[in-house]
Amino acid sequence: MDSDSETVVHTGGCHCKSVRWKAVASPNIVAWDCNCSDCYMRANTHFVVPAERFELLGDSDKFITTYTFGTHTAKHTFCKVCGITSFYYPRSNPDGVAVSYKCVDPGTLKSVEIKHIDGRNWEESVGRSGISAYSKVQK
Image (cartoon, rainbow, N blue to C red):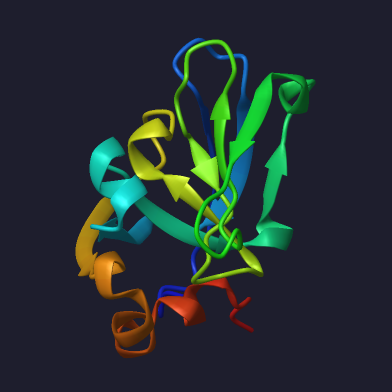
């Protein structure tokens, strides 16, 4: 969700390049620094795109494995080869994909605004944060 109507195709993936994807989003993103037990340990900071604006490329799905915990709503994906989580399916946005912004290939991100979300107190903070609006396609 960005008032900026310009979009670009961001490409990216994991460290070993076994997992590759593309995501259509603004070149000026809002990335979320989450402190839930999983994101905190991985230092995950991500931006959210509508699921229809994210696509795995090639045979990437062969190299992905998934970890869930708690409510099992979030699907934390990572590369079976190098272990990097370049994207995942967040609990906050079940209709979206969370892209680890540091896994975006250079050249398409113009600016990154970092916002914090209190994932340790998820129920209280998600509604206040406005993060769920970021997986909605803006007309």
